[in-house]
Image (tube, rainbow, N blue to C red; front, top):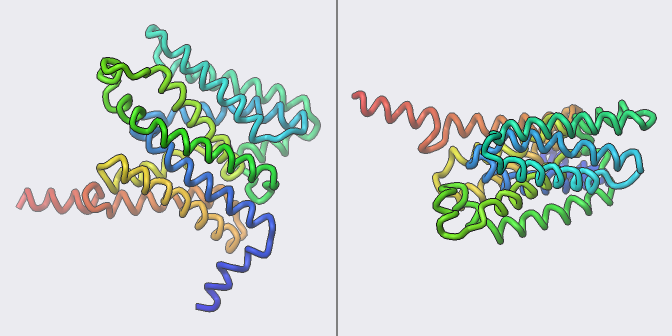
Length: 287
């Protein structure tokens, strides 16, 4: 027991650990909440595209020596707004519009970043995360943006849900569906931006989708799902960070693998929708 408590408390002597833990926890909580709407609306591709769309802003911020989180947020929000506007043309499917801006944004980011000396290392940090190198300013930015996202979720949650379940009915009762889409796209963007330093561009989609997908297997109610998803996201992120400390392995990768392990457990053992429960029901009906 003493050894376990020492394992839990030992990393807290390091400033970089405390900063990393705060960002991992906040990223997991915010992505869990927003990810619930992403999973319900089938927006995973949008999340993937936006995670790359922040690249130009991060590249500009790196070249100018300013805050990477805020730079990524500005670029991501602009791209999310462009996707929402261009997708209103019914001659174009939304995934086509997303693909166009996804590729263009990433290409622009590479061009901008290539103008800076030593850009290769920065690109690697962006792709795979650098949670142990987070500064106090980054923690503050993540905290403020995360709080804003959670506040907007609380304010718009019922309207998001109505637009998700039946868009035509939502329009019929007077809900501004387009504006709700814009707000949700912006919130997804901000959730992704604050998570990039935790797990990197390549893995950030897992932080957005995996906890919500696991929660979806555990409950049929959106309210319960939006409570479970951030608990899974935050808890899995912290556990992955501890595993990284203990095993001296990449933090971002272990955070994602921890969340994936939780999803697999839910897929197998969820009381109603898990594989074992469905197998038992099938066996009972067959008998």
